[in-house]
Every structure is written in C-alpha cells, then in structure tokens.
Image (tube, rainbow, N blue to C red):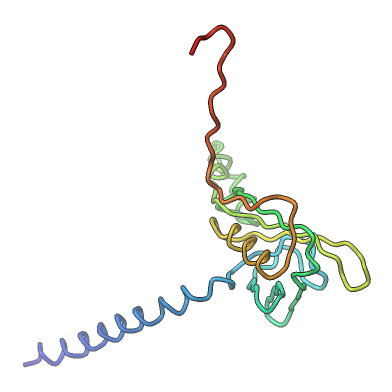
Amino acid sequence: MKMRSAVAPFVAASAIVVLVALFAAPVSAQDTNTLKAKHVIGLVGVKHNATGTLTIENGNLNFAKGNTKAAIPASSISEVLQGADTQRTIGGTVGTLTMLAPYGSGRFLSLFRTKIDTVSIAYVDTSGGMHGAVFVVPKGKGVEVKRALLAQGAKTTVPLDTGATTQTATQKSPGTKQ
C-alpha cells in the first residue's frame, strides 16, 4: 500500500514536466529574432564584453543587459558583416590561471575551442557620426541576425553568406586534352 502512495506523486510530477516541455518548446522556437549575445565593443553606454539579449524587431536592433539598453534603427545601419570564429572554451581569469598549470597542461587546455559567429555592424547616429559595433552570437545564428537586419531595412555591400561552401569548376591545366 505504501508503494502506491509513493508512485502516484512521482507519476504526477513526471506528467507535469512532460507537459511543460511540450508547451515551452514551441514558444522559444517562434521567437527567432531574440537571442543571447555578447557585446564585444561599440555600443554607447554598454560595457565591453557584456552578455545580454539581442533583439531585432520593429525596425530596431536592441541590446539589453539588465537596466542598460541600446537601440539602433536598422535603417541607419550601412553595413552588416557576419562570420564564423572560435574562442577559448575556458576563458577569463580561470583561463589565464590554467596557463600556470605544471608540465604545459594549461597551454594544452587553451587549445580547446568553441565555435561562435560574429556580427559586425556600421551605423550612423542621429548627429551623422559613424559608429561600429561587434557582437558574438551562438554558432549558426550570425546568418539569421544578418537576414533579420536586412529584412528590417539595414544595408550591406557583402551578399548574405549562408555558410555553405560552393564548389568551383576545376580549371583545365595546360597540356591536357578533353
């Protein structure tokens, strides 16, 4: 009899967890223009290397970290560049201190890298001054950010790079016959 009373709460809790997971997934999948990002440099009033939320909506690029917020009209963005990069998996003070580990093991740890995407923008402020900002976003999200900015009115001189490699036709070397 005690076994049944212990199983019932476990089954009920499991059912609640499954229902929450089913309903929470579609909500996060719909919001593709909001993501966690790191502001490396460039926004006025935002500290360097601040991690916050990057949102692209209503014709603006918004970055928020706590009470600190910055908004850039997409129509004032004259260039959007995105690319792939890597960063140390163990960074900051701990990453620096690992270099002091014996027998070169700290240098070995610095070889472990995490893939990221970078998004760089150039924009004109309200007084006509030219500025730039750099963001780090999760791998694969750089193209989405660029696509969303272009859809909101930003401009670029570099075509959208989807990350797919294109194969070029092999050139015929001199002296070979077809």
